Image 1 (tube, rainbow, N blue to C red):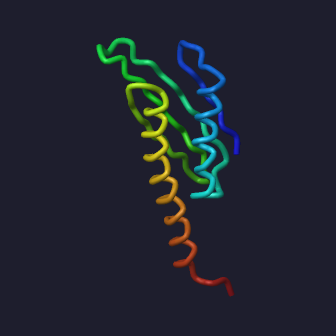
Image 2 (spheres, rainbow, N blue to C red):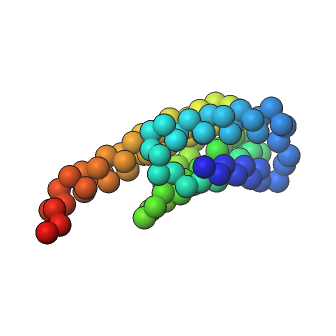
Image 3 (cartoon, helix red, strand yellow):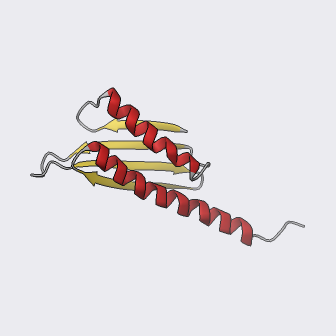
Amino acid sequence: MNITLEPVDFNISQELNDHMREMFNKLSKYNDQIVGIDLYLKSNTNDEDGEKTVDAKIFLPGNDIFVSGEGSDFVSAGQDCYEVAKRHVRKAKEKVKDRQQNRPDKY
């Protein structure tokens, strides 16, 4: 599984890079069909709170999943995004499993 981090208009530390990769690499245990993940890290400097946003695009065969998470820092935003992604990845796997079970056998 290929994980790509793309910070928008800033540079990230190696520690944050490793943490995000390690966190989102765990998604493969919920669905082994994941081809890759693109992570977009954004700092909302226009907000007075200065919230951080992590968007994830998860590539699966047949369809892609796009999720987003927000927090006061990138670690909490990444964790929020990971929890949402985990739920969507599980649901996608269950849909595929249901389709395969309901398919009539070939003759």
